[in-house]
Image (spheres, rainbow, N blue to C red):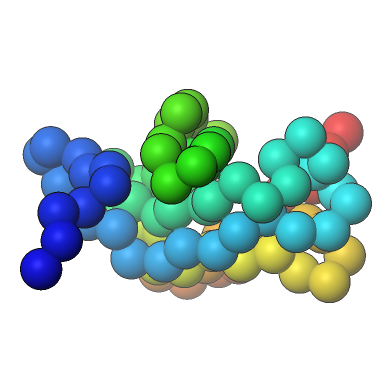
Length: 92
């Protein structure tokens, strides 16, 4: 068994992940989106050569985030289980 390349202590209760794709967020292309059930967050991780070089919160306190994905339009879609909605995140 290999040790994780990156982890949070205490655990953020990761539930869903997806890579940013499409042209909506060109500066985030191939960054990793990670959901945090415990802290009601979507985090954005910049990974370079198998190492996380930056980790930031891009959504917080809108409900427990169960999953996240990028749509064909390039928007980011977090799935919340309380209150049970799908958000659509786009650039201004």
